Length: 181
Image 1: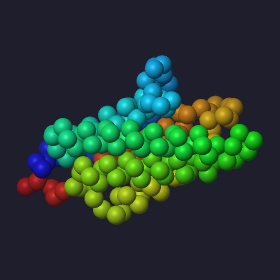
Image 2: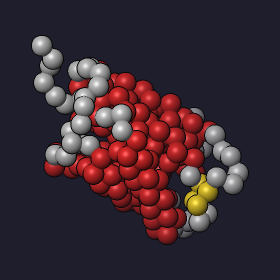
Image 3: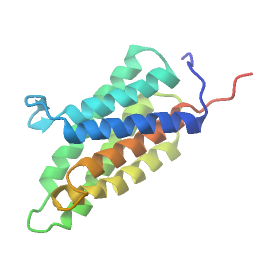
Image 4: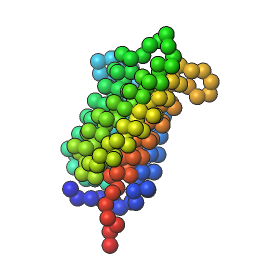
């Protein structure tokens, strides 16, 4: 595949992480009724899928197939993570949100990594997948704040941190290549 623009891995990671913050904020605060799949709201998947596809477009290839693969992969990852969280949540035990979030965040990261593994040559290292799952699990624990009062509550902490961290890792991985002469 023909490589496109050149940025350092750090620059690419920062660019995609900032896009992940924007996607996370949109995911937390934008709601359009009817954009759902089997009862799962799909806007967060659409927003984050666009960010990942932007990374593929910018640093991997401008072919539509890899971008479509990651869009579908992110949608499947979000659907699975959301469904697992709903099934595991115990409303009698608020601390269950921590381990429910960790499991759901890890599942979302695993499935996103699988899509990236298929679509991107540069993402295909074991370290990238392991790091994505670890980040996804730790960031997923922020699900605890969904029902909490105070200044930090709702889905914003979860979406912003999870999407920015995973997007930053993706940008860092996709920009891996030798410096041009």
